Length: 431
Image (cartoon, rainbow, N blue to C red; front, side):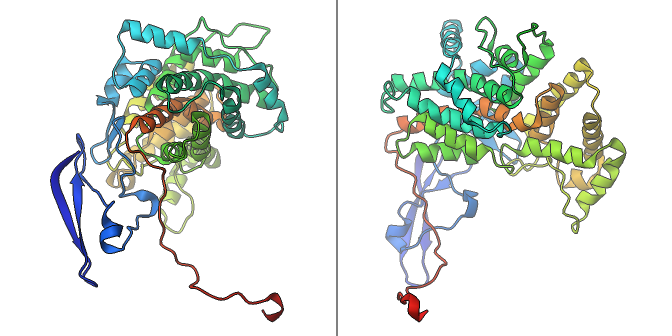
């Protein structure tokens, strides 16, 4: 959208100028449309990490990092966390509106009846080394879905795009559970379609043939809440990766697989895994005070993981929501784990320490999600896989939005070249 305002940029070195349109969205900062800049002035822009660049127009998620605001399709995350479910949020992200009873029943039925994976895909896991990281198996397995569904996938067909979205949201937990069970040499479990989404996943993860699995209701509720909070987060690294790959016309399975590999990085989805490794390094509650002092020492390379956020400059609204659930899970399950004692001691210290309070380095969603996953018995190497299950809803919503947006172009960033100037080739015997 534009309100006909513009920003004039003048190059004082040559007198060339450009009238750049000022674009305004529903809410949030206006954006300067720099598309005419190179034509008018001969210059590109330079923005490492794209921290000040809007890469696309989107109607899915809004973030105000200064005010600690996160909304999916206009709905505050606080309301969705309290009143909704992950499947309902997935429908919202995909369709733009909350479903009525009939629409949700159809959506839930579609998801439920696409949870199975091909038997040959199950055998695909046997090609991995026994200690392969679950994220490596997940990325490869999701990419391989392209080989199973290529005959009925036209990315320009709305119904085919919808079916791909259903398949991905439905099958991701099945594949994720298979990754875990292969890593511990357990037989794969088929999805129990008489269970709801999260319960079904937990049964595929932990149930063994010799006895039924009894779950605490708080476990499923906590995991569903984490899935809601992780479902989307605007144009982050993995979502931007999905969009960039998708802009080439790549199928959704390949695009989501690329998003999974981007999520794997410790600066992105691997952050909650890094939290647990930090807690292990601290070791015991009595060493928390020393760890806090080390974190404040600029000459010490020790860092507290799971505190502060690149986008949220005040507080992470997701962390405020999940903190309460975290304490509820620990109380309900009565888990006796020294690392969880370290985490609670660290949380207490950081919330009271002036150094962290003044810098607004509050525990973020990665801090609490790692603690909850550990309390639920989910191994550390599976933490990012859990993130991927949730974020699949957001990824595929963005992939679909991109294909439905008129005038979408292949992503092609430019660069500031700093290599050698032109030079002539010298034969090897004269070098």
